[in-house]
Length: 191
Image (cartoon, rainbow, N blue to C red; front, side, top):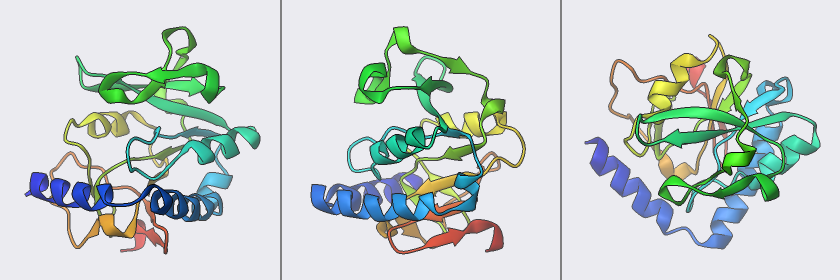
């Protein structure tokens, strides 16, 4: 069931043109920037977008301009775990790594303890209105999210086409608190 949902949404997302991705991403990022949870946070973890995911480069630029601390995920495929590294200058700090994703160069790796993070932008492919998500299936975030301090806001950025009625759930799944699309913000805590 999860794999079928994953493929259906991935196919829909892959049909978005570069212009659609850019315009929808701009709307989503602008909506995110208005959120009190983001405005009150200093140490923010943001994924680096890949393929047709909601673009995060403008978000990262804006956060750094506001003197927020930006942290990015770094995958360890051998252990299927994430570590986080501080990002100071995207142009100088990043190179293509595992899965073709942008990751910090070894000399710019600045690992930090997950308990320092105030807010996490959580990626995913499929979401429901209660904040449950399906990722790419490797479980990186399922293992990472429990290492955060209790109560850290979890926000996902997505296109409306990624929303479904209900995502299959497992006991270890951690729902996000807010979903932000090009059309609305969904408070999953109140659903």
